[in-house]
Length: 263
Length: 244
Image (cartoon, rainbow over all chains, first blue to last red; front, side, top):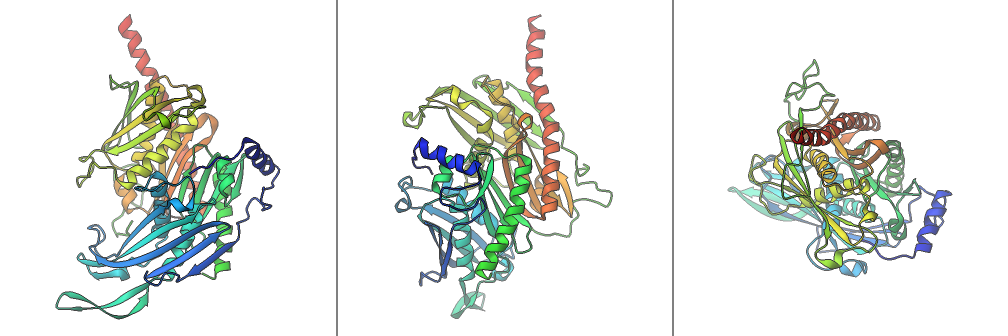
């Protein structure tokens, strides 16, 4: 997921950060401007578009009926998929999902799943036989860095906007009735991503900072300030104290975002 | 992860397999187990049985993948169809693709990639039997295989998981503890550099619990690190004995 930037610029970004500054004028732990729009695709059961600076991610949800997993017969199924579509960046190529899009989908999935954001038991129609399956499709439209936070936010926004079809059971058959009820969402996990540059942690790296970073770490924080998912990425490393520092900042930032979006 | 009434740890702090909360499973390490590979290692950790092989440095195919200033590291983590209770399809799953990526990124910081421009190394990890924390055990074996292949490294990479079951922070999760427990924190470390090269988590932990889990996993890593060094040395000790 990289594009070329000049050595001069790489050096400039790294040197600025070592002095506590960033090329775009943000503080080290500042997010770019966040804009969330919901309900933009009428044919999807839920949808949202998130702008994180110039990074743009759309998420649509679809709901179908299907079989539950054998180890969770009383629970609905959550499926997250991510597409890095070629119109979003000169570095994205058409074709089957590569390791980057699979990792992105699995990070978004883990944040929602491990925080128990969706009350999956309420999606059960007939235990062991029929449940609602929630498909969350992450569609990256413009890549300007930190796809993880933008995608996680867009996924949650879309889920909050998702309507579940009403149904009744007639002679063992599931009949879909008219009308909808909102998808039962009980938690609001927020994912906060850090990049390590010049041995400092910065929040919400944009594209050019991602080219310079040694490593990144993402943490999903639930409504109580608990950590529910972590993913380190990139071929660098973190010191143990940096990881704990990141956890504390992530908790603050998640609260800030949740308050701002009134979730 | 479902909350079941079944107890994973009793009042005395003894786990299902008889371990204390901060106790590792028995670990067996062997280096140089495959004659075709440039480097190889085998790990048994509880019921985990995992083989790792390293091929390279060698010319990369396809050639356009080669980088002018450093070596390319490739990694494939794969589970045998018979390694788990229900047969796993041999086609790579999304989980295996993600794990291949995070294992590669856990090992990359340890290697002097810039010493071998335009070349590549392939790391193959085959999980023959899985019983929880396989990504950690895979890293332990893969790092040994890299050392066995004579690749210049900053340090060995060692990995260990910590987690939470029934409100207790524990070390080295086995499969049932991973599935039924409330959190899993796999961590990889280069001990001499105090550098965490892999960190993941799922479940729910407060910040204090998270700190405790990280510290416990770091302790576990240091214990396994000693075993790793032992295993590497013992390969050469036994060779010497044969020569005499």
